Image (cartoon, rainbow, N blue to C red; front, side, top):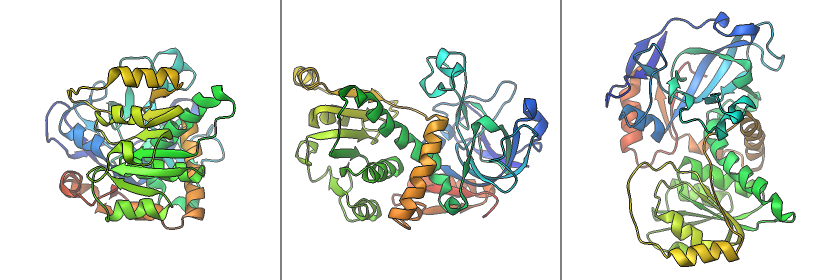
Length: 365
C-alpha cells in the first residue's frame, strides 16, 4: 500500500513509502473503522513538515506519513462500532489524539497542557496521505453523501469553527452579546471559511488581506455578501471598524496589534495563526492595554479542533451548500491526481499564487 512520508529532520524528504495493509484488529475493543481514502487536502503545514521545520515520526518508525485533511469511505467496521458508521459511509477523521493532561482525559485534547502533541500527519502519528487507514470510531465523523464533493474541506472548516465558537462561548459572560460586525484577517483557505461561517451567523464581514482585488479569493468573499479590503490600499484602522469580532488568519503577527486597536468594546480577537518567526515591532502598548481594560476586550488563541467542532462543521457545510450553492466547490482549485505526483503537489503549494485548496485524489471518487 502506497503512502507519502517524510524523514523528520531531513528537509525535502517527501517520498513514496510502502506500508502494510491496515487491519481492524489494530484497534482494540472491536472499535476499528477501516477507511478507503478518497481525497486529502494539503496546506502550509505539510509544506513546513517537508521543510523539516517540525514533525516527528511515531515511536519505532523512521518516517512520518503526512496529511491531516482527510476524506474517505468506510470499507469495514469492528463489532462495537456505532451503526452511523457502516461500509459505504463518507467519513473524515479528526487530527489530534489524547495525551495525559486532564483535558485529554475528557476528550478535549485540543486544550491539552502537555508539551507534546499527538497529531495524525503532523507529529508522532501517521497521517492520511495513504490509500487506506484504520482508526478508532471515536475519532471518525460521518458526513452525508451530499458533501462528497466538498467534504475534504471539513478539517480546515473546523479550525474556523472552533475559533468562532470559542468567541461566542467566552462572551456568554455578557449574557446579551450580539455581534454585528466582524473582520477576518487573511483570505486564504481558513480566512475564506471563517468569513463563510460568520456570514452564516448573520454578521456583516470585512475580509482584510494583502492582494488587491479582483482575483478569485476576493470574488469568493463578495459572493458571500461580505466586503473585501486590500491592506496594500487601506489601513486596518480605516477598514470599517470598530469590530465586535476579529478572526486573525494571516500568519503575519504584527497585524495582531493593529487588530487589537481596531477591536470594539466588548469585542473578541481570535488568533488562529501559528507563527514561528522572530519578528519584532514597536507597538503603542499603553493605548492597547488601556483599550482592553476599559473596553472589556478579549484576545484568545485557538488551535486544533475537537470532535464537537467537526460535527458542527458538518452541519455548517450542509447549510453553506444550501445557502451558497457551489461556493465551497470553488475553493477546490488544485487537484493532484495520485500519490505518485507528490512533486507536482509540492510545486503547487510552494509556487501557485492562485491556488486556494490543493488536494490529492488518492483513490478517486
